[in-house]
Length: 287
Ligand SMILES: Nc1ncnc2c1ncn2[C@@H]1O[C@H](COP(=O)(O)OP(=O)(O)OP(=O)(O)O)[C@@H](O)[C@H]1O
Image (cartoon, rainbow, N blue to C red; front, side, top):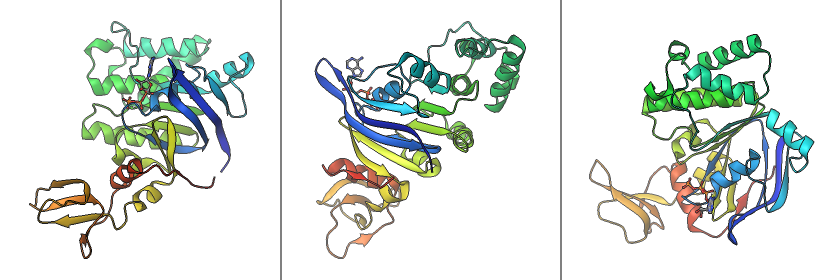
C-alpha cells in the first residue's frame, strides 16, 4: 500500500527533556493505533503531525508535502482533520455553529456548499437531530461526536484522532469504532488511545511508543503474538507474573514468565502491549 505520511527522526524537547526522541515511521491508508503509557509522547507526536508543534529535529511529509515550508504547511493543513485531546469548544455555540466555524477555518468559503457539508458530517456522526442545540447542553459522548464531525468536515485525507473514545460508554464507543473504521476505508487515520480493545478491533496496524521512542510497529496480531506462551492461569498468586489478578471465576490470570507445565491461556493484545513495555527491544515490521 502507498505511503501517505512519512516521518524520520522526529524529536521534540521540552526544557531539554525529549518528549519525542527520534521517531521514524510511515503510514498508509487504514487505521493505525498509537498506544503508549501516560507521558510516552503520543499527544506530542500527534501535534507534530497535525502541524501544531514544529519538531526540534527530524522531518516529515504528508502526501508528499513538507510542512517545514510555508506552501507545504498550507497544503498539509488543507488535507488534515485533527481531533485534539481537549477540543476547545465555545459552549454557547450550537453543534452546527461550531462545525461551521471549523469549516470556515478550513477555508470552505462558499456558504451554501459549506452548510451542506456541515449537515453531512453532523448526519454522519448521528447528530442531525441536535445540530441546533448548544454544546453546553450536549452529553460528553455527543460533544466527542461534534469534535469528530469538526475533524471530518471538508473530507480530509489524513485524520489525526487523540483519544476520541475517552469517557464514552460502551455503546458510544462501538458507534465511534464504526465511524473511525468507515473513515479509514479511504484515508489515513492515526488514532491515539489507551483502549487496547479499540486497537484490536479496528486497526490494521499498531505503533507502541514509550519514552518518546517507537517500541513496536506492526500488526495487532503480531503484538498479541508477543504474549504467546506467557499468559497462564493458576489457583494461587504466581511469583513470576508481571501482572496477575484473581478473576471472577476465582483463579488467577497471569502475564509474565510461566512455570513449567503452566495452564496456558489465549493472549490478548493488551498482554502483548504490557510485555513490549517490559523490554528494551524494538520491533519494527518491514513496511
Ligand atoms: N507543553 C509542554 N511543556 C512541557 N512538557 C510537556 C509539554 N507537553 C508535554 N510535555 C511532556 O512531554 C512528555 C510527553 O507528553 P505527551 O502529552 O505527549 O504524552 P502522552 O503519551 O500523550 O500522555 P497521555 O497518555 O498522558 O496523554 C511528558 O513527559 C509531558 O510531561
